[in-house]
Image (cartoon, rainbow, N blue to C red; front, side, top):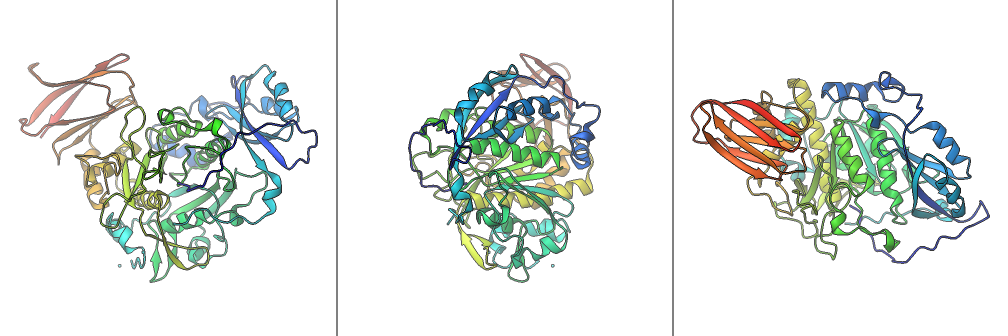
Length: 539
Protein backbone atom coordinates (compact mmCIF):
# COMPACT_ATOMS: atom_id res chain seq x y z
CA UNK A 1 0.00 0.00 0.00
CA UNK A 2 1.44 3.30 -1.02
CA UNK A 3 1.95 6.08 1.50
CA UNK A 4 1.37 9.36 -0.26
CA UNK A 5 1.15 13.03 0.69
CA UNK A 6 -1.55 14.26 -1.62
CA UNK A 7 -1.65 17.71 -3.15
CA UNK A 8 -5.34 18.13 -3.88
CA UNK A 9 -6.40 20.09 -6.89
CA UNK A 10 -9.03 19.96 -9.62
CA UNK A 11 -7.64 19.00 -13.00
CA UNK A 12 -8.48 21.31 -15.86
CA UNK A 13 -8.33 19.63 -19.24
CA UNK A 14 -6.77 21.79 -21.90
CA UNK A 15 -6.95 21.09 -25.63
CA UNK A 16 -3.35 21.24 -26.72
CA UNK A 17 -2.49 21.51 -30.39
CA UNK A 18 1.19 20.74 -29.91
CA UNK A 19 1.76 16.96 -29.89
CA UNK A 20 5.00 17.53 -27.95
CA UNK A 21 3.15 19.11 -25.03
CA UNK A 22 4.62 18.46 -21.59
CA UNK A 23 1.32 17.22 -20.12
CA UNK A 24 -0.60 14.32 -21.65
CA UNK A 25 -3.94 12.89 -20.59
CA UNK A 26 -5.20 9.37 -19.96
CA UNK A 27 -8.74 8.32 -20.93
CA UNK A 28 -10.40 4.97 -20.43
CA UNK A 29 -12.52 3.93 -23.43
CA UNK A 30 -15.24 1.34 -22.86
CA UNK A 31 -16.04 -0.80 -25.91
CA UNK A 32 -19.50 -2.16 -26.65
CA UNK A 33 -18.60 -5.68 -27.76
CA UNK A 34 -16.01 -8.05 -29.22
CA UNK A 35 -17.85 -8.62 -32.49
CA UNK A 36 -15.97 -9.99 -35.51
CA UNK A 37 -12.98 -11.03 -33.44
CA UNK A 38 -10.50 -13.20 -35.33
CA UNK A 39 -9.96 -15.23 -32.15
CA UNK A 40 -11.90 -18.29 -31.07
CA UNK A 41 -12.50 -20.06 -27.76
CA UNK A 42 -11.53 -23.27 -29.55
CA UNK A 43 -7.98 -22.02 -30.24
CA UNK A 44 -6.88 -20.41 -26.95
CA UNK A 45 -3.19 -20.93 -27.72
CA UNK A 46 -3.43 -17.88 -29.98
CA UNK A 47 -3.89 -15.56 -26.98
CA UNK A 48 -2.98 -17.56 -23.84
CA UNK A 49 0.31 -19.22 -22.95
CA UNK A 50 0.44 -22.98 -22.59
CA UNK A 51 0.95 -22.48 -18.86
CA UNK A 52 -2.16 -20.29 -18.57
CA UNK A 53 -4.22 -22.90 -20.42
CA UNK A 54 -2.84 -25.67 -18.22
CA UNK A 55 -3.69 -23.74 -15.05
CA UNK A 56 -7.29 -23.38 -16.14
CA UNK A 57 -7.48 -27.06 -17.04
CA UNK A 58 -6.04 -28.16 -13.70
CA UNK A 59 -8.81 -26.31 -11.85
CA UNK A 60 -11.56 -27.15 -14.38
CA UNK A 61 -11.95 -23.48 -15.28
CA UNK A 62 -13.54 -22.86 -18.66
CA UNK A 63 -12.01 -20.50 -21.20
CA UNK A 64 -14.70 -17.93 -21.92
CA UNK A 65 -15.37 -14.67 -23.75
CA UNK A 66 -13.45 -12.63 -21.17
CA UNK A 67 -10.29 -14.37 -22.39
CA UNK A 68 -10.76 -13.16 -25.98
CA UNK A 69 -8.52 -10.17 -26.79
CA UNK A 70 -9.98 -6.74 -27.46
CA UNK A 71 -11.02 -6.34 -31.10
CA UNK A 72 -7.89 -5.22 -32.98
CA UNK A 73 -9.94 -3.40 -35.62
CA UNK A 74 -11.57 -1.28 -32.93
CA UNK A 75 -8.15 -0.46 -31.49
CA UNK A 76 -6.85 0.62 -34.89
CA UNK A 77 -9.81 2.89 -35.47
CA UNK A 78 -9.36 4.50 -32.06
CA UNK A 79 -5.65 5.03 -32.70
CA UNK A 80 -6.44 6.60 -36.06
CA UNK A 81 -8.19 9.43 -34.21
CA UNK A 82 -4.78 10.65 -33.06
CA UNK A 83 -4.42 9.00 -29.66
CA UNK A 84 -1.86 6.51 -28.37
CA UNK A 85 -3.09 3.15 -27.11
CA UNK A 86 -1.39 2.89 -23.71
CA UNK A 87 -2.84 -0.42 -22.49
CA UNK A 88 -5.89 -2.59 -23.01
CA UNK A 89 -8.14 -4.87 -20.95
CA UNK A 90 -9.78 -7.93 -22.45
CA UNK A 91 -11.58 -8.67 -19.18
CA UNK A 92 -13.15 -5.20 -19.04
CA UNK A 93 -13.24 -4.93 -22.87
CA UNK A 94 -11.72 -1.48 -22.93
CA UNK A 95 -8.53 0.46 -23.63
CA UNK A 96 -6.62 3.24 -21.94
CA UNK A 97 -5.41 5.90 -24.37
CA UNK A 98 -2.94 8.75 -23.98
CA UNK A 99 -3.31 12.07 -25.76
CA UNK A 100 -1.94 15.60 -25.57
CA UNK A 101 -5.12 16.99 -27.15
CA UNK A 102 -8.23 16.08 -25.17
CA UNK A 103 -10.51 17.50 -27.87
CA UNK A 104 -9.90 14.43 -30.07
CA UNK A 105 -11.79 12.33 -27.54
CA UNK A 106 -15.07 13.60 -28.98
CA UNK A 107 -14.13 11.80 -32.20
CA UNK A 108 -13.30 8.64 -30.24
CA UNK A 109 -16.65 8.81 -28.43
CA UNK A 110 -18.47 9.08 -31.77
CA UNK A 111 -17.18 5.72 -32.98
CA UNK A 112 -20.11 3.28 -33.18
CA UNK A 113 -18.47 0.59 -31.04
CA UNK A 114 -17.51 2.97 -28.19
CA UNK A 115 -19.96 2.96 -25.26
CA UNK A 116 -18.29 5.76 -23.32
CA UNK A 117 -14.93 7.31 -22.43
CA UNK A 118 -13.77 9.14 -19.34
CA UNK A 119 -10.74 11.09 -18.20
CA UNK A 120 -8.64 9.06 -15.75
CA UNK A 121 -5.46 11.07 -15.19
CA UNK A 122 -2.46 12.85 -16.64
CA UNK A 123 1.29 12.55 -16.83
CA UNK A 124 4.00 15.19 -17.00
CA UNK A 125 6.26 13.85 -19.74
CA UNK A 126 9.07 16.16 -18.68
CA UNK A 127 9.29 14.29 -15.37
CA UNK A 128 9.96 10.96 -17.04
CA UNK A 129 13.62 11.73 -17.62
CA UNK A 130 14.21 12.71 -13.98
CA UNK A 131 15.33 10.16 -11.40
CA UNK A 132 12.47 8.99 -9.20
CA UNK A 133 12.89 8.39 -5.52
CA UNK A 134 10.81 5.99 -3.51
CA UNK A 135 7.91 7.28 -1.45
CA UNK A 136 7.81 4.11 0.66
CA UNK A 137 9.63 4.51 3.93
CA UNK A 138 8.80 2.81 6.71
CA UNK A 139 14.66 -10.09 9.73
CA UNK A 140 18.22 -27.21 7.37
CA UNK A 141 17.40 -22.70 6.31
CA UNK A 142 19.10 -19.79 7.95
CA UNK A 143 16.56 -16.98 7.62
CA UNK A 144 18.83 -14.40 9.18
CA UNK A 145 17.01 -11.09 9.60
CA UNK A 146 13.83 -12.62 8.13
CA UNK A 147 13.52 -15.21 10.91
CA UNK A 148 10.91 -13.39 12.99
CA UNK A 149 8.48 -12.75 10.15
CA UNK A 150 8.83 -16.26 8.71
CA UNK A 151 8.73 -18.12 12.01
CA UNK A 152 5.51 -16.29 12.84
CA UNK A 153 3.73 -18.17 10.03
CA UNK A 154 5.73 -21.40 10.55
CA UNK A 155 7.40 -21.14 7.15
CA UNK A 156 10.08 -23.66 8.12
CA UNK A 157 7.57 -26.52 8.10
CA UNK A 158 7.04 -26.22 4.34
CA UNK A 159 10.64 -25.22 3.61
CA UNK A 160 12.13 -28.15 5.50
CA UNK A 161 9.92 -30.52 3.51
CA UNK A 162 11.36 -29.04 0.32
CA UNK A 163 8.42 -26.79 -0.57
CA UNK A 164 10.16 -23.50 -1.32
CA UNK A 165 8.10 -22.34 -4.29
CA UNK A 166 9.99 -24.27 -6.96
CA UNK A 167 8.24 -24.15 -10.36
CA UNK A 168 5.59 -21.78 -9.02
CA UNK A 169 5.32 -18.56 -11.02
CA UNK A 170 4.62 -15.36 -9.08
CA UNK A 171 3.63 -12.04 -10.63
CA UNK A 172 4.62 -8.93 -8.67
CA UNK A 173 2.56 -5.83 -9.48
CA UNK A 174 4.24 -2.75 -8.08
CA UNK A 175 5.74 0.68 -8.67
CA UNK A 176 9.25 -0.26 -9.74
CA UNK A 177 12.12 -2.64 -9.12
CA UNK A 178 15.24 -0.51 -8.71
CA UNK A 179 18.51 -2.43 -9.12
CA UNK A 180 16.94 -5.90 -9.17
CA UNK A 181 19.05 -6.49 -12.29
CA UNK A 182 22.30 -5.80 -10.40
CA UNK A 183 21.55 -6.13 -6.65
CA UNK A 184 23.54 -9.03 -5.17
CA UNK A 185 20.55 -9.85 -2.97
CA UNK A 186 18.92 -11.17 -6.16
CA UNK A 187 21.94 -13.05 -7.54
CA UNK A 188 20.20 -16.39 -7.00
CA UNK A 189 17.06 -15.18 -8.75
CA UNK A 190 19.01 -14.14 -11.84
CA UNK A 191 21.58 -16.96 -11.97
CA UNK A 192 18.97 -19.69 -11.52
CA UNK A 193 16.84 -18.35 -14.35
CA UNK A 194 13.93 -17.57 -12.05
CA UNK A 195 13.54 -13.97 -13.22
CA UNK A 196 11.04 -14.76 -15.96
CA UNK A 197 10.62 -11.29 -17.45
CA UNK A 198 9.33 -7.76 -16.96
CA UNK A 199 6.48 -5.60 -18.21
CA UNK A 200 5.85 -1.89 -17.70
CA UNK A 201 2.31 -0.52 -18.02
CA UNK A 202 2.78 2.70 -16.06
CA UNK A 203 4.82 4.86 -18.45
CA UNK A 204 4.97 5.30 -22.22
CA UNK A 205 8.68 4.34 -21.98
CA UNK A 206 9.54 1.22 -19.91
CA UNK A 207 11.54 2.02 -16.80
CA UNK A 208 11.40 -1.10 -14.64
CA UNK A 209 14.81 -1.02 -12.98
CA UNK A 210 15.19 2.72 -12.37
CA UNK A 211 11.79 3.94 -11.27
CA UNK A 212 10.96 3.12 -7.65
CA UNK A 213 12.48 1.00 -4.89
CA UNK A 214 9.22 -0.29 -3.44
CA UNK A 215 8.76 -3.30 -5.71
CA UNK A 216 12.37 -4.34 -5.17
CA UNK A 217 11.85 -4.29 -1.40
CA UNK A 218 8.67 -6.35 -1.79
CA UNK A 219 10.41 -8.83 -4.08
CA UNK A 220 13.23 -9.32 -1.57
CA UNK A 221 10.70 -10.32 1.11
CA UNK A 222 9.56 -13.09 -1.21
CA UNK A 223 12.85 -14.30 -2.70
CA UNK A 224 15.82 -12.25 -1.55
CA UNK A 225 18.93 -14.24 -0.59
CA UNK A 226 21.98 -13.10 1.35
CA UNK A 227 23.56 -16.33 2.62
CA UNK A 228 23.30 -16.64 6.42
CA UNK A 229 21.91 -13.10 6.61
CA UNK A 230 18.54 -13.13 4.85
CA UNK A 231 16.19 -15.51 3.02
CA UNK A 232 12.81 -14.74 1.49
CA UNK A 233 9.54 -16.59 1.99
CA UNK A 234 9.65 -18.38 -1.40
CA UNK A 235 13.38 -18.71 -2.13
CA UNK A 236 12.98 -20.92 -5.21
CA UNK A 237 9.84 -19.47 -6.84
CA UNK A 238 10.05 -17.76 -10.24
CA UNK A 239 8.95 -14.18 -10.81
CA UNK A 240 7.43 -11.81 -13.35
CA UNK A 241 8.05 -8.13 -12.50
CA UNK A 242 5.12 -5.98 -13.62
CA UNK A 243 5.10 -2.24 -13.13
CA UNK A 244 1.60 -0.74 -12.93
CA UNK A 245 2.05 2.17 -10.52
CA UNK A 246 3.42 5.59 -11.49
CA UNK A 247 4.92 7.00 -8.28
CA UNK A 248 5.12 10.77 -8.95
CA UNK A 249 1.33 11.17 -9.15
CA UNK A 250 -1.90 9.36 -8.33
CA UNK A 251 -4.76 9.14 -10.84
CA UNK A 252 -7.54 6.68 -11.56
CA UNK A 253 -5.73 5.65 -14.75
CA UNK A 254 -3.38 3.62 -12.55
CA UNK A 255 -6.21 1.26 -11.65
CA UNK A 256 -6.51 0.51 -15.38
CA UNK A 257 -2.75 -0.07 -15.53
CA UNK A 258 -3.29 -2.53 -12.68
CA UNK A 259 -5.95 -4.33 -14.72
CA UNK A 260 -3.55 -4.60 -17.66
CA UNK A 261 -0.92 -5.96 -15.30
CA UNK A 262 -3.06 -8.69 -13.77
CA UNK A 263 -4.30 -9.71 -17.22
CA UNK A 264 -0.70 -10.00 -18.38
CA UNK A 265 0.06 -12.12 -15.31
CA UNK A 266 -2.82 -14.40 -16.24
CA UNK A 267 -1.78 -14.66 -19.88
CA UNK A 268 1.77 -15.79 -19.05
CA UNK A 269 0.49 -18.40 -16.60
CA UNK A 270 1.23 -16.90 -13.19
CA UNK A 271 0.07 -19.03 -10.26
CA UNK A 272 0.27 -16.34 -7.57
CA UNK A 273 0.08 -12.55 -7.80
CA UNK A 274 1.29 -10.09 -5.17
CA UNK A 275 0.06 -6.51 -5.26
CA UNK A 276 1.33 -4.18 -2.56
CA UNK A 277 -0.73 -1.34 -4.02
CA UNK A 278 -4.01 0.31 -3.13
CA UNK A 279 -6.18 3.19 -4.24
CA UNK A 280 -8.56 5.41 -2.28
CA UNK A 281 -8.09 9.09 -3.14
CA UNK A 282 -6.37 10.81 -6.04
CA UNK A 283 -4.56 13.99 -7.03
CA UNK A 284 -7.79 15.04 -8.72
CA UNK A 285 -10.47 14.95 -5.97
CA UNK A 286 -13.19 14.44 -8.57
CA UNK A 287 -11.84 10.90 -9.01
CA UNK A 288 -11.80 10.08 -5.30
CA UNK A 289 -13.40 6.87 -4.10
CA UNK A 290 -15.70 6.79 -1.10
CA UNK A 291 -16.05 4.01 1.42
CA UNK A 292 -19.30 2.98 -0.25
CA UNK A 293 -17.23 2.26 -3.39
CA UNK A 294 -15.29 -0.41 -1.49
CA UNK A 295 -17.76 -3.11 -2.54
CA UNK A 296 -15.54 -5.23 -4.77
CA UNK A 297 -17.23 -4.21 -8.02
CA UNK A 298 -17.01 -0.42 -8.34
CA UNK A 299 -13.39 -0.29 -9.51
CA UNK A 300 -12.04 -1.97 -12.62
CA UNK A 301 -9.09 -3.16 -10.52
CA UNK A 302 -11.29 -4.88 -7.95
CA UNK A 303 -13.39 -6.56 -10.62
CA UNK A 304 -10.24 -7.72 -12.41
CA UNK A 305 -8.79 -9.08 -9.16
CA UNK A 306 -11.90 -11.22 -8.68
CA UNK A 307 -11.72 -12.44 -12.28
CA UNK A 308 -8.07 -13.37 -11.78
CA UNK A 309 -9.04 -15.43 -8.74
CA UNK A 310 -11.80 -17.10 -10.74
CA UNK A 311 -9.21 -18.02 -13.38
CA UNK A 312 -7.09 -19.87 -10.84
CA UNK A 313 -4.62 -17.25 -9.57
CA UNK A 314 -4.02 -16.77 -5.85
CA UNK A 315 -4.14 -12.97 -5.59
CA UNK A 316 -2.69 -11.37 -2.43
CA UNK A 317 -3.16 -7.62 -1.98
CA UNK A 318 -2.10 -5.37 0.87
CA UNK A 319 -5.07 -4.14 2.91
CA UNK A 320 -3.75 -0.60 3.30
CA UNK A 321 -2.03 1.70 5.75
CA UNK A 322 -4.98 3.95 6.60
CA UNK A 323 -6.02 2.53 9.98
CA UNK A 324 -4.82 5.56 11.92
CA UNK A 325 -5.80 8.10 9.24
CA UNK A 326 -8.96 9.80 8.11
CA UNK A 327 -9.74 7.24 5.40
CA UNK A 328 -9.47 4.40 7.94
CA UNK A 329 -10.61 1.54 5.68
CA UNK A 330 -9.17 -0.83 3.07
CA UNK A 331 -8.71 0.37 -0.51
CA UNK A 332 -8.96 -0.93 -4.07
CA UNK A 333 -8.41 -3.75 -5.00
CA UNK A 334 -8.20 -5.12 -1.44
CA UNK A 335 -12.01 -5.01 -1.41
CA UNK A 336 -12.21 -7.66 -4.16
CA UNK A 337 -14.05 -10.90 -3.51
CA UNK A 338 -12.13 -14.16 -3.84
CA UNK A 339 -8.67 -12.72 -3.16
CA UNK A 340 -6.51 -12.65 -0.03
CA UNK A 341 -6.39 -9.14 1.41
CA UNK A 342 -3.50 -8.94 3.88
CA UNK A 343 -3.38 -6.89 7.04
CA UNK A 344 -0.29 -6.04 9.09
CA UNK A 345 0.66 -7.36 12.52
CA UNK A 346 3.51 -6.78 14.95
CA UNK A 347 6.02 -9.47 15.83
CA UNK A 348 3.82 -10.37 18.83
CA UNK A 349 0.68 -10.71 16.73
CA UNK A 350 -1.03 -7.46 17.61
CA UNK A 351 -2.52 -5.27 14.86
CA UNK A 352 -0.02 -2.74 13.49
CA UNK A 353 -1.29 0.71 14.38
CA UNK A 354 -1.55 1.72 10.72
CA UNK A 355 -3.21 -1.39 9.26
CA UNK A 356 -6.48 -0.56 7.52
CA UNK A 357 -9.86 -1.63 8.80
CA UNK A 358 -12.49 -3.76 7.13
CA UNK A 359 -15.15 -4.72 6.35
CA UNK A 360 -16.02 -3.96 2.76
CA UNK A 361 -18.93 -1.56 2.31
CA UNK A 362 -21.17 -4.54 1.51
CA UNK A 363 -20.09 -6.10 4.81
CA UNK A 364 -17.73 -8.85 3.64
CA UNK A 365 -14.87 -9.88 5.90
CA UNK A 366 -11.71 -7.94 5.11
CA UNK A 367 -8.84 -8.22 5.59
CA UNK A 368 -8.66 -11.99 5.11
CA UNK A 369 -5.32 -12.81 6.73
CA UNK A 370 -2.37 -11.01 8.28
CA UNK A 371 1.40 -11.24 8.49
CA UNK A 372 4.16 -9.20 10.07
CA UNK A 373 4.07 -5.64 8.75
CA UNK A 374 5.77 -3.76 11.57
CA UNK A 375 9.58 -3.74 11.31
CA UNK A 376 9.50 -6.26 8.47
CA UNK A 377 13.00 -7.11 7.28
CA UNK A 378 13.93 -6.73 3.62
CA UNK A 379 16.98 -6.27 1.39
CA UNK A 380 17.34 -2.67 0.24
CA UNK A 381 18.41 -1.58 -3.23
CA UNK A 382 22.06 -1.40 -2.15
CA UNK A 383 22.03 -5.00 -1.00
CA UNK A 384 21.93 -4.10 2.67
CA UNK A 385 19.49 -5.17 5.37
CA UNK A 386 16.73 -2.86 6.45
CA UNK A 387 13.32 -2.95 8.14
CA UNK A 388 10.12 -1.13 7.23
CA UNK A 389 6.46 -0.82 8.11
CA UNK A 390 3.40 -1.38 5.97
CA UNK A 391 0.83 -3.86 4.78
CA UNK A 392 2.96 -3.60 1.62
CA UNK A 393 5.49 -5.77 3.44
CA UNK A 394 2.96 -8.13 5.04
CA UNK A 395 1.45 -9.09 1.68
CA UNK A 396 4.65 -10.52 0.10
CA UNK A 397 5.16 -12.74 3.15
CA UNK A 398 1.70 -14.17 2.49
CA UNK A 399 2.25 -14.41 -1.27
CA UNK A 400 5.56 -16.18 -0.82
CA UNK A 401 4.04 -18.67 1.60
CA UNK A 402 1.11 -19.33 -0.74
CA UNK A 403 3.64 -20.13 -3.46
CA UNK A 404 5.23 -22.75 -1.19
CA UNK A 405 1.82 -24.06 -0.12
CA UNK A 406 0.69 -24.34 -3.73
CA UNK A 407 3.81 -26.36 -4.53
CA UNK A 408 2.93 -28.65 -1.62
CA UNK A 409 -0.64 -29.07 -2.87
CA UNK A 410 0.39 -29.73 -6.47
CA UNK A 411 2.93 -32.31 -5.35
CA UNK A 412 0.60 -34.25 -3.08
CA UNK A 413 -2.93 -33.82 -4.41
CA UNK A 414 -4.77 -33.57 -7.70
CA UNK A 415 -8.32 -32.60 -6.81
CA UNK A 416 -8.06 -29.28 -5.02
CA UNK A 417 -9.20 -25.78 -5.88
CA UNK A 418 -7.74 -22.35 -5.16
CA UNK A 419 -10.69 -21.72 -2.84
CA UNK A 420 -9.80 -24.90 -0.92
CA UNK A 421 -6.21 -23.72 -0.47
CA UNK A 422 -7.26 -20.31 0.77
CA UNK A 423 -9.88 -21.77 3.07
CA UNK A 424 -7.41 -24.18 4.66
CA UNK A 425 -5.00 -21.31 5.34
CA UNK A 426 -7.79 -19.22 6.88
CA UNK A 427 -8.76 -22.11 9.14
CA UNK A 428 -5.18 -22.40 10.37
CA UNK A 429 -5.11 -18.76 11.44
CA UNK A 430 -5.23 -17.78 15.10
CA UNK A 431 -8.43 -15.71 14.87
CA UNK A 432 -10.42 -18.05 12.63
CA UNK A 433 -13.25 -18.57 15.11
CA UNK A 434 -13.49 -14.85 15.93
CA UNK A 435 -12.14 -12.79 13.00
CA UNK A 436 -11.60 -9.07 13.41
CA UNK A 437 -11.76 -6.13 11.01
CA UNK A 438 -8.09 -5.37 11.62
CA UNK A 439 -6.39 -8.75 11.25
CA UNK A 440 -9.15 -10.75 9.56
CA UNK A 441 -8.82 -14.44 10.39
CA UNK A 442 -5.41 -13.62 11.80
CA UNK A 443 -1.92 -15.03 11.31
CA UNK A 444 -1.81 -18.48 9.68
CA UNK A 445 0.28 -21.48 10.62
CA UNK A 446 1.27 -23.24 7.42
CA UNK A 447 1.88 -26.56 9.14
CA UNK A 448 -1.72 -26.51 10.32
CA UNK A 449 -2.80 -25.37 6.84
CA UNK A 450 -1.36 -28.59 5.42
CA UNK A 451 -3.33 -30.63 7.95
CA UNK A 452 -6.57 -28.82 7.14
CA UNK A 453 -6.00 -29.22 3.41
CA UNK A 454 -5.77 -32.99 3.81
CA UNK A 455 -9.18 -33.05 5.49
CA UNK A 456 -10.70 -31.00 2.67
CA UNK A 457 -9.47 -32.86 -0.37
CA UNK A 458 -12.21 -35.52 -0.22
CA UNK A 459 -14.81 -32.89 0.52
CA UNK A 460 -18.13 -32.63 -1.24
CA UNK A 461 -17.96 -29.95 -3.93
CA UNK A 462 -20.87 -28.69 -5.94
CA UNK A 463 -20.74 -26.32 -8.88
CA UNK A 464 -18.98 -22.95 -9.15
CA UNK A 465 -21.90 -21.27 -7.34
CA UNK A 466 -21.88 -23.31 -4.13
CA UNK A 467 -18.81 -25.02 -2.65
CA UNK A 468 -19.10 -27.27 0.37
CA UNK A 469 -16.07 -28.12 2.49
CA UNK A 470 -16.03 -30.60 5.35
CA UNK A 471 -13.45 -30.22 8.07
CA UNK A 472 -13.61 -33.42 10.04
CA UNK A 473 -10.91 -32.33 12.47
CA UNK A 474 -12.91 -29.35 13.75
CA UNK A 475 -16.38 -30.85 13.11
CA UNK A 476 -17.40 -28.13 10.67
CA UNK A 477 -19.30 -27.95 7.41
CA UNK A 478 -18.19 -24.84 5.50
CA UNK A 479 -20.24 -23.38 2.66
CA UNK A 480 -18.75 -20.79 0.32
CA UNK A 481 -21.21 -19.30 -2.16
CA UNK A 482 -21.04 -16.80 -5.01
CA UNK A 483 -24.68 -15.78 -4.49
CA UNK A 484 -25.58 -12.19 -3.67
CA UNK A 485 -29.21 -12.94 -2.78
CA UNK A 486 -30.65 -14.41 0.41
CA UNK A 487 -30.31 -18.20 0.68
CA UNK A 488 -31.63 -20.87 3.03
CA UNK A 489 -29.17 -23.48 4.32
CA UNK A 490 -30.67 -26.62 5.87
CA UNK A 491 -29.27 -29.87 7.24
CA UNK A 492 -31.57 -32.91 7.53
CA UNK A 493 -31.32 -36.41 8.87
CA UNK A 494 -32.11 -39.21 6.41
CA UNK A 495 -35.52 -39.49 8.06
CA UNK A 496 -36.26 -35.87 7.13
CA UNK A 497 -35.81 -34.26 10.56
CA UNK A 498 -34.51 -30.69 10.32
CA UNK A 499 -31.31 -30.45 12.37
CA UNK A 500 -30.12 -27.02 11.26
CA UNK A 501 -31.57 -24.13 9.26
CA UNK A 502 -30.50 -20.56 8.66
CA UNK A 503 -31.51 -17.81 6.26
CA UNK A 504 -28.51 -15.68 5.35
CA UNK A 505 -26.91 -13.34 2.84
CA UNK A 506 -23.44 -14.24 4.10
CA UNK A 507 -21.27 -15.92 1.46
CA UNK A 508 -19.55 -18.02 4.13
CA UNK A 509 -21.64 -20.28 6.40
CA UNK A 510 -20.20 -22.55 9.11
CA UNK A 511 -22.25 -25.43 10.54
CA UNK A 512 -20.94 -27.23 13.59
CA UNK A 513 -21.48 -31.00 13.41
CA UNK A 514 -20.13 -31.64 16.89
CA UNK A 515 -22.47 -33.97 18.74
CA UNK A 516 -24.04 -35.41 15.59
CA UNK A 517 -24.01 -39.19 15.34
CA UNK A 518 -21.89 -40.73 12.60
CA UNK A 519 -23.90 -41.32 9.47
CA UNK A 520 -25.37 -39.82 6.30
CA UNK A 521 -27.12 -36.44 6.30
CA UNK A 522 -28.72 -34.23 3.66
CA UNK A 523 -27.49 -30.66 3.12
CA UNK A 524 -29.67 -28.31 1.08
CA UNK A 525 -28.91 -24.80 -0.19
CA UNK A 526 -31.88 -23.02 -1.76
CA UNK A 527 -32.74 -19.55 -2.97
CA UNK A 528 -33.26 -17.51 -6.11
CA UNK A 529 -31.39 -19.27 -8.90
CA UNK A 530 -29.95 -22.04 -6.72
CA UNK A 531 -31.27 -25.34 -5.35
CA UNK A 532 -28.44 -27.68 -4.37
CA UNK A 533 -28.88 -30.91 -2.37
CA UNK A 534 -25.95 -33.10 -1.31
CA UNK A 535 -25.39 -36.13 0.87
CA UNK A 536 -22.89 -35.51 3.67
CA UNK A 537 -21.13 -38.24 5.63
CA UNK A 538 -20.32 -37.28 9.20
CA UNK A 539 -17.82 -39.57 10.91
